[in-house]
Length: 604
Image (cartoon, rainbow, N blue to C red):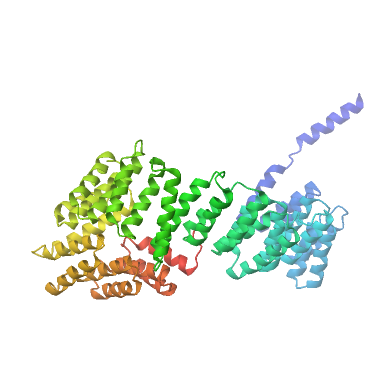
């Protein structure tokens, strides 16, 4: 009983003493440190170190304060004392090494850094902590040594590959960085997307060669690993080498006995990048090798035809044999699947071939009339067919038939983009026939279209009419110009040029002069006579510094240099002029984007 009373009395005495608040000191010390008041933080952290006896965090903060105050000698004494303890954290060897580094004693610093590595426990968390400490001090070589020894300790050569790859990246050692990132994907295939993003962000074009070399080496060493061929395909696609990528895609499809999904996705990718030859080869491979049992057979046939059509549109000087072969393929497809709503889109494409490349407008009209009358045809496909048929009727001189078809679509799809498109075509038809007042009123409404293309074209024509009709008492020059545009639309190029030349002769000082040069450039471009098109675009730009056609001509010129004539520097110069000199231009945003792409910027 007396013993219990003594213990109780001691407890009361302790409670009566005003002990400092541990939690309050900790918060205050942290606040001082965060505010950069290292003198006050030092006092409190020293007190916390003495109170807790062995708390590594408080000791680290205490040493940090000494470093911030440049009291290196004092820090050295504190750390040496701490490291005399058998349980001392190897982190303090790094801190002491940092002290010697500040005191220009490189040998002593290296000794302490090596001691920290030697004293590591064979635990992943512990090794990463030591490695991160070196990394945060920018001691990259020592961080690398840490992870390399850690991998040996854990008997796992891949366990720290991600950390090592990042360190080699920081050091600018491309080959070793690539090697470690390849180690990452070999052990963790689910990180493929992440590694690809890193390669995109950090690899230069010259690094791709090294990456490709290492991938090929690994494919030879590990022929059964799938990640390397997949990464090689990705790399070849980055280089726009679709032909090379296709070889790998085919090989992987055969190896994995896939259903053609990879092939079909690749073919679409090649088509979207305008590599029509490779896309056609890929779609044909699905049709011919995978065969009718493939779930992609029909889609591959359709897309293969579409690629051939797009190749015909984009490339100049294709032989008549190519056109005849394409028509034969269309007919073969239609014979196989019949003439019905399921082949409607293919028949629409065939009609385009007849109209523009085989010069058989009547055949094109006949095909579209057949499509429109298919039972149970999708209303949107029917409307699209009517719009195209309206264009062909206009080309054939049947203005009333054209406006009737446009109006039918407008009425059926009033609040839809199809309706807006129909409305625009009707307004353009009125412009062609000289009814400028009504046409402009429609263009003014269509400037608010949700379609950027319709809105831009409507604005362009509205401004054009206003600019050229309001400055002259007679509408005749503008009527003749609109007539020339209609003749160009109807592919009557020779007649269009005659009308344009007559305007120049009769009204040599009219404001339409620059527009005439621009229209001639467009006509030559449509006929794929790019040298002549460039000449007239340049005349447009030089004709009048106040011309509303300068930005149009610059953009058209930039496109020709970029994709047809292939002079990237001239293309960049054209785009640059647009977003610098014509900031309000409809082309300004797109011109800046194309300029940056040509400059090599990586856009998000």
